Length: 213
Image (cartoon, one colour):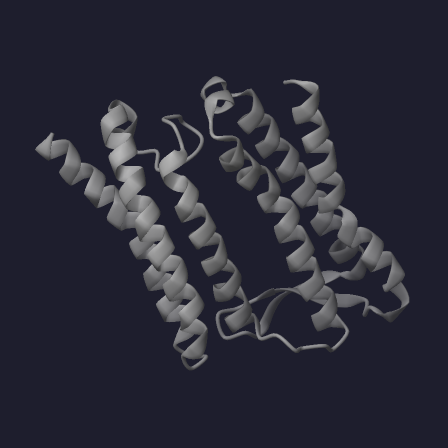
């Protein structure tokens, strides 16, 4: 691992921990027990102490960030990956940390401007669109992309599947973002169906491609 990659890990880890500073600033205003997880109906179904919400969650995400970064920067085939693809993977956890903890703090303080049932599909859809654009640029490896039997056994199958999968993910992302216009009760069902299609249709395509070639 070179110095540039090490600096990237340090920077993204620091950003992942930034919500702790916000939590300390808001400490006296935050309740002792805070909701940290919500069900598909939008109601809190998971609670944590203020200390765990402020310190524990960012620290857990930081550990995940470091592990993922080290894997992506040290696996030999990943050093050949498109740099923008690697950056997208490395910056995913810091972004999630900022957004997730901001929502937790806002909810704990009674600021419920954003409905989580509509916020998550928007963010997830945006992520799908971005990832879908970069999916065709991922070279064959065992840590990134659509890693199944047929793509790993054939580089031609890998690139064909990822070109198709990229289009599928962009369409899925747009559908996820549009789903926020539907009634709240329907959004989780649509969200699950779209994600399932984005996950399994490229796999089916890969299998069919392997049989034809």
